[in-house]
Image 1 (cartoon, rainbow, N blue to C red):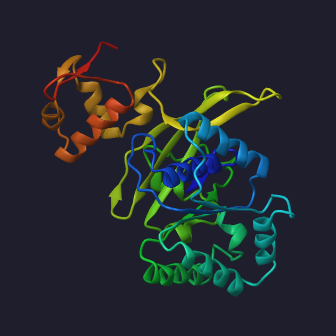
Image 2: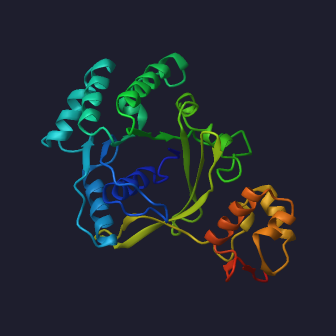
Image 3: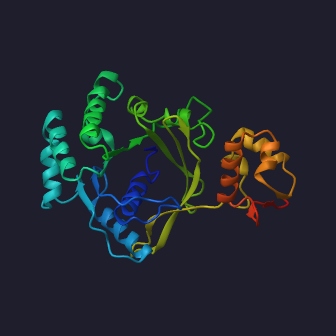
Length: 312
């Protein structure tokens, strides 16, 4: 998972953790309940617990117990923080042995390391260094096939010289190459994801996209869920929800170049997936485009496989 500074990577990972430990669907996607172990190296404890509490309030359920949390920025009087700080003072081999012991207690867990470099102090630009961690992860997968790792990375700052910045929606592979020091890890990951802040600060909209090994993914437009403000006037964040495209926004931003051509050539009125195929899209691409148009609110779903494109 890659994103710029302040791009809400940690809140997104926390939102996933809540869904994983409760079994609640995330943004319309089904979730299989699993334990979660989080190593949060930059999130203050007050921020974590406020967000965790807000998620419970949003969904109207008791806070789940299937999470094991290690906050580096927490109080040293907290047992888990003290344990983590002690581990971080150890060489790489002992850190990995400790983490392996944690995995053995929850062999089907999702282990979140946020960010990667804070727990694995290696030169991520050198493939030989990365292979040490990669081979270790593969070894753990052989021992615990259901184990999953999620690593987060910060993207590099935009170049002041370059006038172009890859689009996370249209060119996710190029966009993910901007992950600072993370390309060697990403090239060996089964799933690569990116989160990018979009628009005015008051909107709290985000682009979310990536790709699986051998399979493109469908991008999403996410919106922060805010449950009022705290005593200091700061928004109380409670995860994310899918967002519709705003009326004043260009739909081309969320469509591929080929989909843009088909969309512009599609006359207002009723249409079916077969009409998208007739416009030159392969069947799978036509269905993907249909799903994207519905999710963005660009078309209305009618009966019997028909959809409606309204006048611009």
